[in-house]
Length: 124
Image 1 (spheres, rainbow, N blue to C red):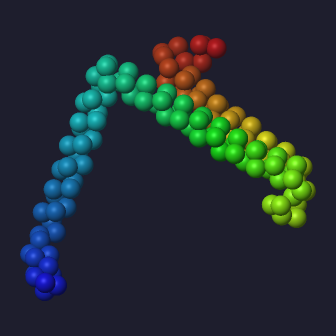
Image 2: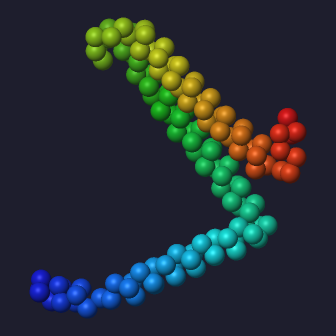
């Protein structure tokens, strides 16, 4: 069985495989470009971007809420997470969550200003 697989693999022409993958990549790239040029597709791509940012906000919110809840419980119940100050850990979790929300918000703001319309920053 092993010898048969090796014999079959030895018959593969590497240059043809490379040519085929290059052609497939070019065709895929051209298809994406053609679809993105279509106004309806461009609108759906924009909606997909908004949807992705909504998911990122949700993930940041859930992870931040879990971190804050666990560290708050650690502070209340007597520091079972470790030897560090539980109040300090709780406030670090709050600060980390706030910074994560701020980073996502800044990225979304820049994305909206740059890619939103022709007027750009003047939308402010």
